[in-house]
Image (cartoon, rainbow, N blue to C red):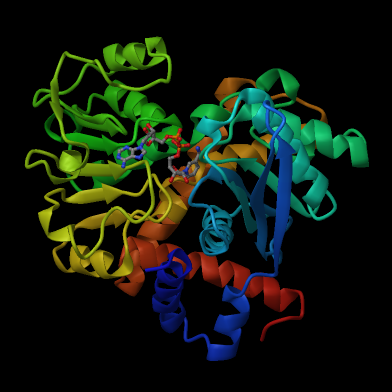
Length: 414
Ligand code: NAD
């Protein structure tokens, strides 16, 4: 299944509840603008290398469009379109004054030197600088990009348009970045996992958690939940699953990750080492947090999953057919457009600070993040009870309704 088709199916279930007619559905779902560009750089050895870059601007009725930049070999137009549309519903669910966008380049950044990634980023900006900006479309980091890429992007964009750090978020803290941006997505995942578990009667010391993916989001979610006294019995990265039935020592495993040259868990010996996918099928896990890739829970493997709760830290980890099966089995899924919205929320705080030339301390960022995520969680929870739908459909209902209302006020939709 293609990524955009999966999102369309989730959208359609909510649109059905809202009784939105076919034409308006199409208008809300279709991207506002899609741009594909050639990005050519000179490699360090003097050879030319060509890549394809994308920026999809999905919706702008609620404000400037917002969404990350992904550098990954599997980036293509369909994936970027799907992720751009997710951003529209995500910013609407947490009620940020933004629309949705996403971009990326089909490239494996681990095969490039740092200087090559810099040249690639600058060449990409040369191609798209006139369609992004602080009031139109504001990029941010995603898989394969980080604060350094954001700093190069800003620097190159400012060569055309002059000083304006609010063109991009996720910048280094000393370069107009926000304190707390790096931890924000994982922290949001952690805090909502805590809230949801408590609501379902799953108390910390007796509720085991497994986290797939131990990168930016996975590590910060693990840290938050470990400090909240949940046993994290398994984590995984590309080198396999690391499992301890009594709970991993997250402080030690984080230390191992920092010490390892590529930040991998390989060589961590204070636990069992299992195959990479074993994490998803463990018998003693109540809460599963996919925090790596999209499309990891499908009709092929859904029957092997034992967890009662799944928190979607990654974008699009569950296919619609698997989602339906999980709902029928009574598994509670906290959807990506709510669960991982902490990153874009703190990106919004960064943009606000840049525009005001003012800096917030970390405790203010954390407090406002918690406030925004809690409010969105309560609204989605209540909608799910009222409409008797899943948390995912409830989140889509809220998101679509807000976008529809903005379009209506702009004189576009009826
Ligand atoms: P990252 O690149 O920092 O980390 C990804 C991790 O997943 C790495 O530990 C990698 O080894 C691991 N991994 C890759 N393939 C795997 C597999 N098959 N099995 C197990 N582990 C595997 O990426 P990230 O920023 O942490 O993002 C993770 C997910 O969260 C992505 O889907 C991303 O779109 C989503 N997300 C990220 C943010 C953010 O602020 N970083 C915000 C919203 C959503």
